[in-house]
Image (cartoon, rainbow, N blue to C red; front, side):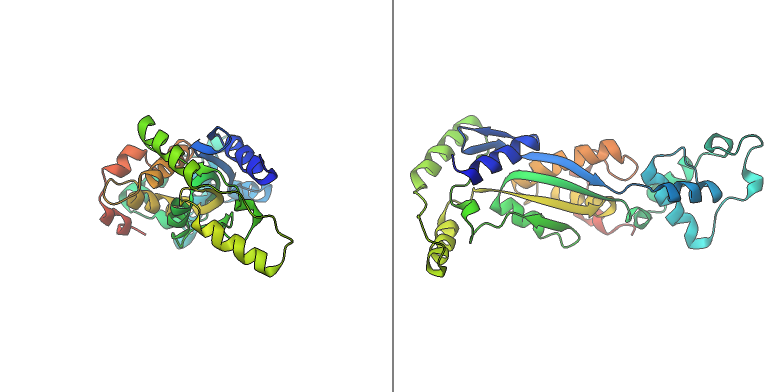
Length: 267
């Protein structure tokens, strides 16, 4: 196994994916690696402005964004007598829920960003994710590089279909060229890599706000014209975000029940 192939396999497994025969990605790795966090300064400010710091961090940030629009911060008179801690003030759960569920003000959650490492997906699916202009990506380039001379390949579908794909990919493979790094050799590598099967596996980091992930899932968690692997990856990302940000991100099944027009509701 080449160094690059070994590194890619290690990346897929580290992200929670599965590799077989040292060549095929059976399940891509999808792992949340970064999320917007509050600073100590923010927490002190939230206490001063009577933001409900007993709520999850992303709700606190959204509450600030909601209340700053009309300077609708609580007055001191609304705080219950006693200690100045979070328990002494009314909960903001109903307020935060109203912003999202009744008024559709998802824009207040635009500041909560998250980044996923997605490793072992096909080039085609990578292109579909990159096409979301709201997202920011850092991706493995797939042509003019030694890293893709001997790539992993994504296989999909039921066992019988995967067996056929494995054999077809093996039949299509050929050894990489040894070169001296000249421009001519690099051009040969680029064209050769473009001709390899479209199932070759790549990796990327995918960053968006939870508001934009919500709208992405409306369009991508659908049986209408959406590729299998795109749905598979989005389901994995959605399940992780739903567990962390349930006020904004719904369970995958809820998105499948929506129509695409829901993307344009609210802000």
